[in-house]
Image (tube, rainbow, N blue to C red; front, side, top):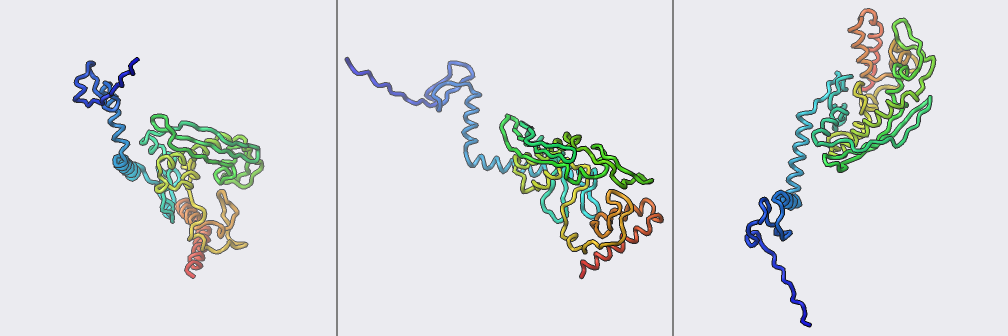
Length: 315
């Protein structure tokens, strides 16, 4: 019996393959057969995109477009005279005194997500514990692109121990009872809140923080937006946001054991010397506009307190 003759395969070029017997098909040198023209376009595109030089050029182009969008399309907050964002006017982002990075709001993060066609792929509560005295939760958010592929994730927490949940008006929302004076100011809490009623608000705020964090991570915007401050501030766009203690505040003298006290507000009865300079300045402005004669004594006490701090800082 004779040995079978070896089959020699010759790779054909487009010219050698000739015209396709099927309309709309072209010869693929890579596959060595006729394929639909659209499929060949996809193969050629994939080959180009695999080129490192092309990938770098495309990255630079997309990055420049994203940063231009942030600079030109996002609206910056309005500020008080002391440089902090105004309540209800925080818009898409703001800058805090003595911090270089921007703090992006939930609204600003949503605009960037829309530009990049990112959406929430998964959102789940990873931890939750609520009692009458306290409530806390952690939420994980995973973002995906237009094709459904994961692009970034972040987990964030929220707790009723935060200042935003401790204000008298907020505590009343969750069942607290307060005694008020004739001007409607909160004087004394008669019944504590039940923070089991705050579960939805706590989980919602944690979810907003996780979304903002996931967006910053997915879009690689850590050099533009402060990740920690942006996630901490998410969900608090209706309030003025301040850092812990600015360097200028650290120079103020220690609170006195006695002295003038606040006559109204959430911190009624507290010493003026225990308040931040920015808060005192805002109180003074409010009193001047409301009734300068009625609050003349209080305005004078504020002026004395601020002047004593200025002198102490100069020394």
